[in-house]
Image: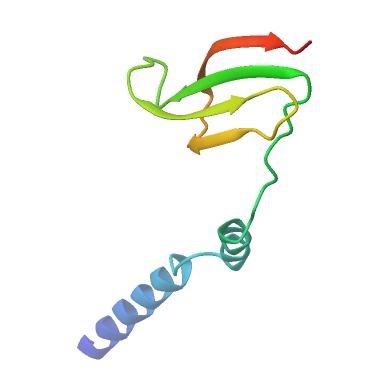
Length: 93
C-alpha cells in the first residue's frame, strides 16, 4: 500500500512539472528576435518636435524622450511609453 501511494505522488508531481515546465518554444524564439532587433529611427521630414515619455499616467517619473529636427533622423533616449507629452511641435518652412 505504501509503495502505491509513493508512486502515485511521484506520478502527480511529474505531471505537474511537465505542465509548468519553463518557457514555451515560440516565446523563446520571439524573445530571441527582440534581443537582436534594431528598428530604424524615424525620419523627421518637415516636422520639428520634442516628446517626453513618462512611466505612468501621473506623468511624474520621466523615462525618456524623442526629439526631431527638420529633415533629420530622430533622437531617442530612454524608453518610449504610451504616456507622452509633446513639449513643442512645428512644421519646417
